[in-house]
Length: 113
Image (cartoon, rainbow, N blue to C red; front, top):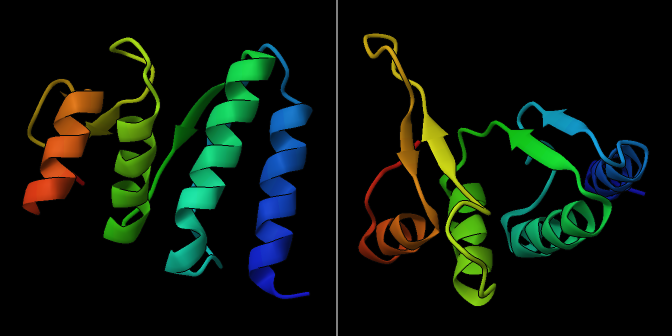
């Protein structure tokens, strides 16, 4: 199996073993082809919701966050379920993008990372 399959398996096992807790995933898209990003986010979103896991993930990949936007657009959740938080060195707090803003940014090609 390739690195992508192992990465997806690792993420799935990590979420299941974190029931009721917090999962930290650095560079969540490492080893994954852009074509599977939506599937990865769907797996994470549905499993985290079911098991009450809060997920914090980092990425530098625009394909990764735009795939997250697609999930945010299809899930009819209340505000606050999915956010992107950009950290800038000169700012005292993160810049928060809610689900609606993530979708708009993806549609218009606005950078949020």
